[in-house]
Length: 316
Image (tube, rainbow, N blue to C red):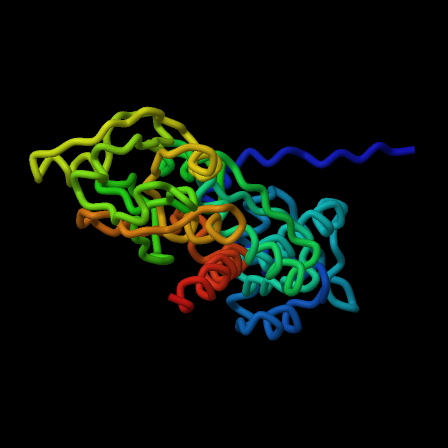
């Protein structure tokens, strides 16, 4: 039995015209010079010239003339399936990307956000997924301080976070989800509620400060400093969702985003009041990396997040 080996090609592939693969594939299928040329929209001389180039590339006749047309040499027969596979791969590269069909898709996405972002986003998003994409899962991940790098490293498909003042790394896109205002939470029956809370009363209260990054100060302290005043922070916590529970059992006060405050006031004995000092609003955005910008699945995810936020936003 004769053992046939494919001889290695010593040519630099980068110097080879890959259009020759199309010609070789057509010749293998048609085994006729004229028919192969018509299939490719080439004249017979152009097809013949391409065959001559192929023979030089592979150092083999590849096809010999017979009364029925062109008969492939053993080398051409060995090349047949690799060439077809290569053409299929090239065809997939240039074929239009398949649409993302959420109803039948089976995959998972990761969203990096804080507990505040999870609280605002997750309830509506999970309901939306169950309705539109029952086999799509979402993993909520902790938010890095440098979340632009988190996206660049591929550790999250999407970030939901307050708008940053510093410059993000190149290749990061963003879109506004909503604008939020600050309010205060106090327990029902707090002795100061009946008298009304003015600036002097407010600054004398025991404040809880939420600081996810563990840094001192914040927008309240900045606003008070402009008025030449300050407050006493008796407790600093890293989580937005812990503070309302702490306020419920004490005479302390916490200042936080209205969406979280109002939601907790519906389930705990808490009251929402406006702070006695003007505080800036803040903008919550979603961020994603350039490599996901045109991906149909990622586009659907961003639309789903926006849709999950919109009902809460439109109700305000």
